Each structure stands twice: as C-alpha cells, then as structure tokens.
Amino acid sequence: MAPRSAGSGKVSRDPVHHPLFARYYARVSVTAESRWGMARVRDRLLTGLWGRVIEIGAGNGLNFSHYPGTVSEVVAIEPERRLRQLAVEAALRCEVPVDVVPGAAEALPVKSEAFDAVVISLVLCSVRDVPRALGEVRRVLRPGGTVRFFEHGRGGGPAMRFTQRALDRTVWPPLSGGCHLARDPVAALRDAGFELGPYRRVLMPEKGPALPTSFCVLGTAWRPPATDS
Image (cartoon, rainbow, N blue to C red):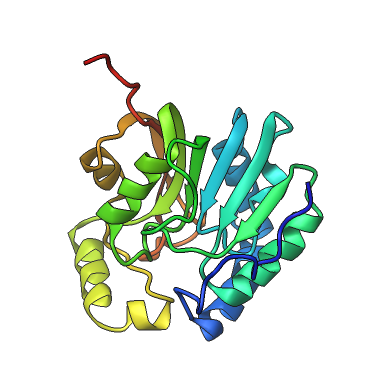
C-alpha cells in the first residue's frame, strides 16, 4: 500500500511549526544513526512488533526501515511539515506499508482501539500536554496492546537535574522545537494507566560526557486488558 500524501487530511494548518529546528533535527538525527548508535536503539525498540502500528511523532521517518516484516501497516503521525515531507520520502523506500499523515499527539486522527501497538520515540519531551497525549495513546490502542517507547528526560545527579530544570524554564524549549529536558516518561506512562514492562536506562551518546539530553529510557508498556464487568 502506497503512503498517502501528507495533505490528505482536513487540516487547515500544521499543529506544530518549527521550520528551523526541523532542518537542524533532520541533519543531527541522521548523524546520530551511526555515530551515536541510534540505529541499534531503533532495532531494539521495534523488534518483535506485529499487526497494525501507529507511530506518534515520526519525525523524518528514521524508524521506518527498522520495522519487522510482521508489521502489516504503520500509520505515522507527524505534525511538523518539513519533517513530515521527509517522512513521506522515507516511507517510499520502506518495505513495510507506511501511511504518513498530519496530526497532533493530543488529538490523533484515527479510530479508537484500532492498533496492536503504539510507538513513541523522542516525542513526549515536546508534546504540549503529556497526560492528554498518553490518553490518546490509550484510546487508539486495543486492550492488551503494546507501547514501545524510547524517550529522553530527567536524569543524572542533583547538578544535572537542576540544569535540566533551569533550561526548561528559559531557553531550551523555544530553541529546540518545544522540547523539555526534565520530564519523566516512565512516571508519565504509569500515571496514564499503562502497565510497565521491562525498560532500561540508556545514555546517548553512549560514550563521552553526559549532556542534559543524554538520559534516555527504552522499554515496553501495555494497555491493560479489558475486564468483564
């Protein structure tokens, strides 16, 4: 199935517009694939997935080539226009069917309980309303469905955490496309009612000095199965 054009939805304007940051991110993310080991992280993030998958905040589509053949379809949501255009190009090179569409994490343009898995990768740092976004993740995921996540957030010692909070209150979000450094993705998933599976802390890059963006977590969560009333 060929991907749809990013303009196929009834969206009057992009919910996110960070053209300068999008250009920067597109360059840096490609470099990180080999130099920082992100390609290996993407493999671990996506291995074992199957069925229908929705990826929220797909960026420039670097995850697409890592989806296993057991995935029947990926619906990739990306709100930023330039990154979405790059994601469409990446989808055309992908063996797994990928449909790239505009949309915001807080209001996903898909039906409820329509997906076997949700992928969130470096997106919770920048959504405007984390609880609402994770409520949407829960809505579109079938009961018992899987969430695969790779996110950066709060980490390090007291000095580093102070630095992260200070940057969040000042220059970092406007310079970095709305990104925040001191959010806690694991706690957010737990508070949203997901059952946490195995997860591991990861430093990115793996070698060299730790940066405020270095403290990442890679793991799995589930929407609890439906229970009989």
